[in-house]
Image (tube, rainbow, N blue to C red):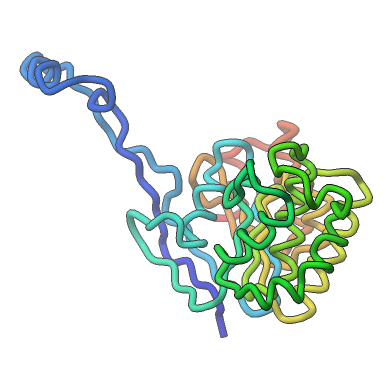
Length: 257
């Protein structure tokens, strides 16, 4: 039974002159026939489904629509077309600085993020020592959050998300930040979460990570779904061939019909 269904989802932005001109200029441009406005598809007709315990790797070059799609899946953004069907508890790490207050301490921010995720103070108190130990930030717990490096912020955000027992965990390049030791820990923790029945979505440019951890894969290119499937190794091979210029996009599309 699917825990997440993304059905023919498109996300459209309206782009053009209207963003930069006033009413008078708009009227003049309309009369002259020089007014410009069009729809831009950040994502176009994306369809896939995930079962409990799946780990989906989403690959694609910058501008492929990966992060925009994750915002729709996590409920931050409503699709322009199609629908996302999800009745599970979703924890999304999309922007590492979101949900934190730079003036508050690391400890205070841990409780703040937990509250934003819907967890009680009692629950967060029980989990706090595990979270701070895993993030390796014990000696920084009383320091202002704004003093942390981006890697430290990433570690704290990941630690909170992974210890609050999500049903669906969304990671957008989070495990790519930090040193090799923490990346290994985060991968092991993610596998533990999956083994516990959670479904995970990982956006990563690290194909080795995708090959090792994911059982499903979605390839996006400029908002278009190239393919979705379970043959992770072969799809990664084809993606690498495309990146290296060995196969054109047209040849890739022919492969996947």
